[in-house]
Picture 1 (cartoon, rainbow, N blue to C red):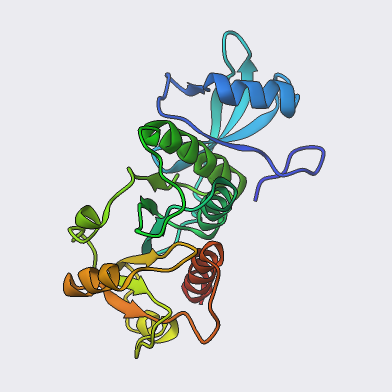
Picture 2 (cartoon, rainbow, N blue to C red):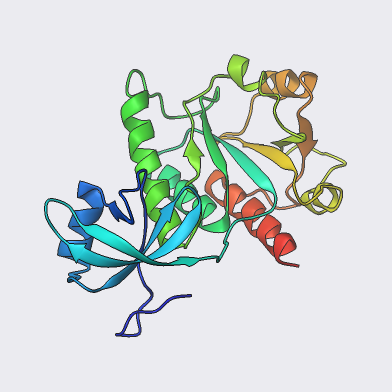
Length: 247
């Protein structure tokens, strides 16, 4: 891990475009660098471009921060397993927590789900919400030194959720009795697998939802004897996966 001359961890930022031998950062990141971090010309930052980390030096601040590449950092901080969390919509504070912690622990994709018992109804505010959620996971990815920013998808309804097919395994996290548990299913999954977990809202799934998912090859999965809060479930799943991935 790279440290600056004051002993602090060097900040990481994601960019979408390379300019010659450097990068121009966004207005948002420029504000963070200048107003929050109070950096100056000559300071170092990490820039992630197309999944590669570069150590860069700040060259100028006009109009936005421009940095030049000094070296490439081969460090990788991604899970070998590609994990998607389908999270039933919950109140804003809980959703923010889920996005942050899942990102820090290595999730690849987060799909919001409009469950029958979700207390939140977006009603025309979906795109604005998704932009905010994507900003949250970007900041969490930078803070946790990720090489990738997780994707936050559009909100799905049940009819679209059950059509998801590009996965090796799809699990429905249920409070009902199941002969499958997290330890058992993960022991049978290869290191390069793509897996999906569906997590219910505060009131749980309806019996109709669970039947529709199981009829479409979602495997009921127990997370243990305790009933976890919806905002705890994803953190628990990602923590176990990250622990296994480190072995």
